[in-house]
Length: 70
Image (tube, rainbow, N blue to C red; front, side, top):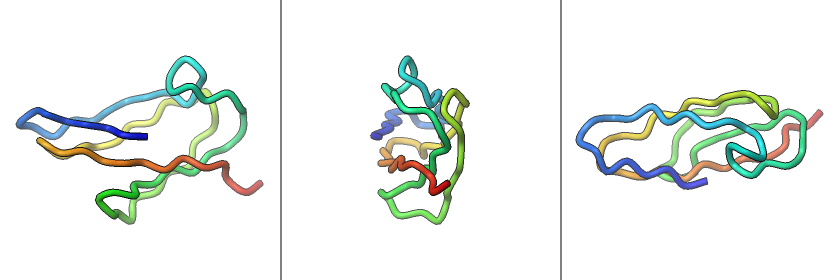
């Protein structure tokens, strides 16, 4: 997932882990982490839940979303 912030201020982007939110079709628990730029931040969330991610000003981040091991 690609998040872009063209603004002068940091944004807190919110999205839902659902078909309507990001096209997610399978239920279950997911792990989300930032691949670019590299970060140690990781979240776990279930399908249908909302997620908030900070995107620094005038930059972009790439997030990876995978099913959590159950």
